Image (cartoon, rainbow, N blue to C red; front, side, top):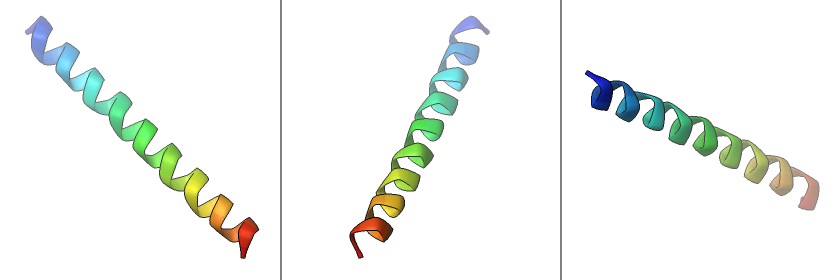
Length: 33
């Protein structure tokens, strides 16, 4: 149970970082163009 919860929170954190990275990438792309 503990390992499942830990894996879930890790996946959520990875998803958040992924969306932040995509958002920053698109924002930078807009500023360059």
